[in-house]
Length: 482
Figure 1 (cartoon, rainbow, N blue to C red):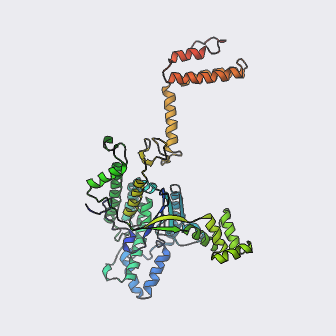
Figure 2: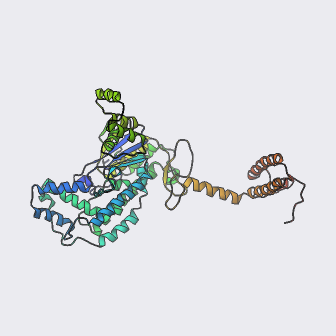
Figure 3: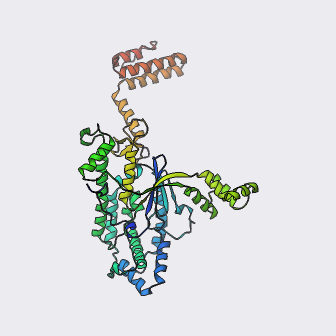
């Protein structure tokens, strides 16, 4: 058996492969949620630093040669208009991300509205808190097809002209760093719809080099292959309907082992995991308040702002000083106590998907396919349902609510007892309002009528028997001829 990743794909695109910082995957102590922390290096600030770093050691002509190898004769890496579009786009992407995640905290949240520093990836320097499973589902159901079609259009227009040839092996480390940054910029500029189609593709942005339709198609096929493999992995491990249910007598872990055996994969997954008792959220909150990014609707932010400006109890200042912390840090720690995590560095989409899938398996999660949208979801507790609580695209309510309404309408249409009950309810309610029937008598009748309606639904009495009883309940009026 081989030690290849569960999806049997080879990552040759992730920026991490070209020297960018690894992301971190941190599991909450209860094992039910995780945090994906994305590198802060996908930013134009770092591109400018790479340029400055190279300019200290090489000529301007050498810099031009490296840049021209990527963008050709185009006069600038990115235009001012594209800068502004990036800014608006990043906020929109993070807004959509927050609808799915437990929490998304991005450095964007604390930047001035006048900031002119967009990111290659909208998840740059972001921490995404997700329930275990949601990252997998997000990738599994990402619409890479539509995104690919959008990118094909971009691949056919404004192609770099007069790109110079460049042997990367001849570049020193700083020159390579600049070259990869410019390639990442151009990849983002052209093909953002595809690598922003899911959380994990945005968190591990790709680097392409020629920006041709062929190269784009190869990256698209790489993503589709991962999707297909992940779908098969879910089917083998969790799907109740897979292979006519023949594996339902096996545990999820046994089914997972069967999948590995079929694909000649080792069941051993080697990852370096370390434990971390972290106060990073409190530290970030304190830093933001210290730098003036204060939410005056947040009580903790207000208290830290007062503390930073010396407007709180001096005795508290002195007591905390002996402990080596400031009052501002003290209030941030009260709001964001330390969390214990299992932390693993992630180099690729494959690793992130694998870590989350194995945790899903460890949690012994029960997964079912929604009978309305057809997507997998995690069943919560002992609540048995066939429908998920996601809001499908184009809908305003989740599948559970829509299915409940549809089932009620179907029940109404198929059950002759219900319209009979409604007919006589309206008739006798009108007679209550005209004081022909007393209110206590009507309430007693209503209870009995509902009881008999249920008996009719359960076929304990016939529809005719139920109608005769309804008609004879208040016999002071003759039945009208239909």
